[in-house]
Length: 307
Length: 262
Image 1 (cartoon, chains in turn red, cyan):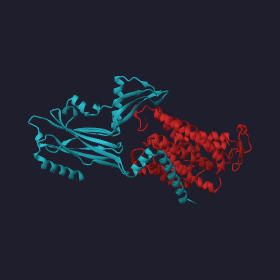
Image 2 (tube, chains in turn blue, cyan):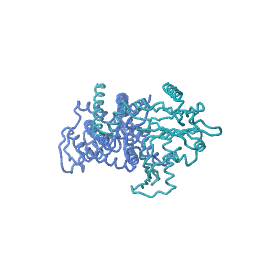
Image 3 (cartoon, chains in turn purple, blue):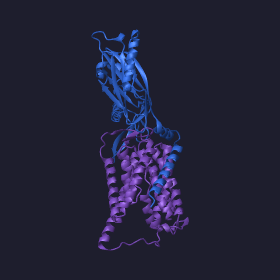
Image 4 (spheres, one colour):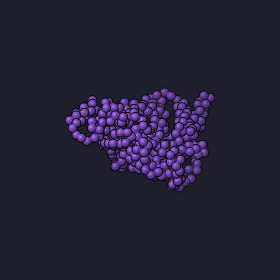
């Protein structure tokens, strides 16, 4: 059954879209990630214009983050103060990102920016995840335990001004690092159509030294508002948000995530992370290949509305 | 079925008005309006007509019909990729000022046999006879650059090639069939990705290489129902649309959380 997408202006199989949402949802439930970094490239592979894929994906992430944050809210594992500092940075970063996106779209280089950002971030994150998890697997085999997080440890982060007290995270640190993390992630949201959790979560744990239990809830809290803002900005500046597409992906995604989470409960953390790392590198390799392989036709038509 | 009825109605009209002395064509379309709804996967427009009896061919004369359907014109940009440091990136681009969003042509015989090059160029029969308005070439730095004849042709060919691949340019020599000496019909495929707007279906009657009559019929293609509401809102009230999209997502996320609450 075909469905016509009013903004993407093409007709696609409804089950393909539901299935795609379901598959990515399953993976996101399994690995505990947002899945935007997989969905946006997949949407581009099936023929959705990149600008529509990015903007629509931000819209879908709003929904998946809301359903995620509610559970954390109940468990009181959201540091609202930290979330607000991250959000202020996120707002500035995403506004800048949307305008950069618009400018590059006008001069025809936005696809290049999207591909480069994906290759760079997926490459780095995938490699780090794979290395870390393989080490953890080896350590588990040899029976040794890895050195854990040392919360009292001080680094250069603690020497910065504008210190604030974050009660729920039990931290007294400068507001500058979370602000910068928020801004960086906000820019990525606007350019890549991701939630940014896959950057923000490691940054919160390793740079800010936040306790692991509040990290997910707090990042989801920030992601809701940043992706919401990015959706509105993309809509105003580029008119590329397709609610029909977002809704279909969402339905598949919500259902898929439930099964993914159940399936993931039976698997070991480091094995999951190793698999996710491999998956991330695979997507990265495919995008990299597309950039260097000689295209079938050197000429392309600019999508409508770009002028 | 509806198409068949229209054909019959037309034939009846021709029979009734048989006494009229005017030479030429009578034509009609199976639909004058195409609505793009959520289940739209493209459609087929039937174009048919008759050559009036008074203008029947004398022995030895050739009679041909060519049908051109074209959509609203707008500007299009074609970009050429170049390899820079091993990576293929969009390099120079050419913007055409006035490109039909849809163009289909069909005729009774191959285009080059029905009329001279000059006639086809004037009537824009065949994609290579289409005129696309002013060409503006832009370098990767965003500055205007001169465009030589060879490059202009290369970009124009690319534009036509890509439009054909998208199903938006279509040529069917011998696509028009004569059902009798005077009756003819063709069907034009309208793909799902057509731009909306006012189209014209122009039917040419060509006798011995000269256009002796031509009739234009309007065809209106528009999104309708939900698709129209979404598209209009997104383009006319983008702020409202963005806020609506976020609210919809919020509601959907909330509902999902309620359904799957442990």
